[in-house]
Length: 149
Image (cartoon, rainbow, N blue to C red; front, side):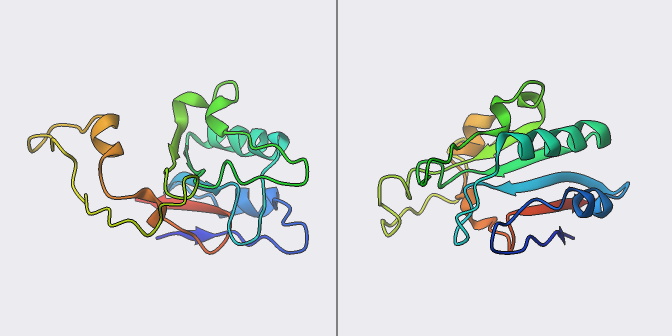
């Protein structure tokens, strides 16, 4: 069951205390949507480092939705959590070509991995990349403490 951490306009600053308060022993990951649509929020390097510190301290995954990574304006810089020191191993980045190349209306119908793993075996990242679009994991706010077991 997701636990949402609200961010408030106009600057959509990360409420780090609220994010940490939302983490329980059942929390398995933190979802970050950057750049976020429709707010335009782009998480700063410092904010991602703070999220990373929480993830390390609580042994959590960081799931990032970076579909809009090429839509950054006003001198802002898109930084991927996976590019930060020590976070690559705990970050799963979701992205897509559809927004960048304006092909969102094309009839993509692939909803299963091309070569599903036999029952009981793990899927590889290349299998997951061909699975149904991860962009459906849209949240109501850019940061979400998620995945309670």
